[in-house]
Length: 306
Ligand code: 3PG
Image (tube, rainbow, N blue to C red; front, side, top):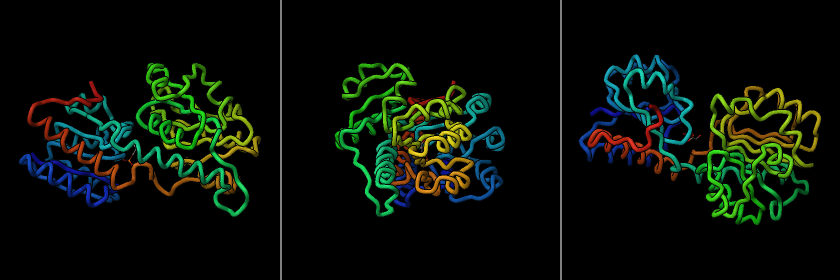
């Protein structure tokens, strides 16, 4: 079968080679489309392939229409808000993700950005430490769990809110379960977002929650920009001059925020959370193996569409 790896933001070369080896060993052919700048290039590349591996690349109805032989899309990563699941189902295309494969990379970046925030963006002034401080994890999935593990090394006090996660999982990780979202924000100086972008979560974190944060609060977003109510956040930062916002997912109003709140906001130039060789290898190879398994047996253990 012909398998396309379509990544606007490329994997590390070592991961691409690994993907190629896995696919070739199983008798498949890999085609690579990296750093494309135009959707037309993707539409062209998908026209004769049976499988596609993507990252945050948009797979919408147009792409699915153009992909006449497509049977499976694997999102090499966790969030699949870039794939139109209903359209995939309508086209009889299976969609899988690779949960957990890049989560350590994202979790490490949470602390990279958090330390930067409490050291005043490394501007030479005296900052603060994380030890003994309270961290609230908003959603206790794979990334949230890795964040909790690393936070323990910093000797932080960790709690989490996640209505979809059994309390037992949190307790076994030494994390205090929180039941009320307002409590998550009011009790924790640091809040790290790990909610997916869904109809339920879009624009769900804004003025009301952010202004509950204790003095000197830092909101860390390595999830999706869509979960933030950007105007509400800007208003909160305006009124609460002690708050900071660091994000791996640049908001649409990034330029305004950077101008209005210098030293209090930071945005990576592009989404960097999963941009490590290890995460690329883990997620990329998992995606390739899932495709091999799908064509060999029909199994799709991480299917996310119905
Ligand atoms: C994910 O959902 O897996 C992460 O946000 C990483 O996305 P990326 O593969 O586009 O870097």
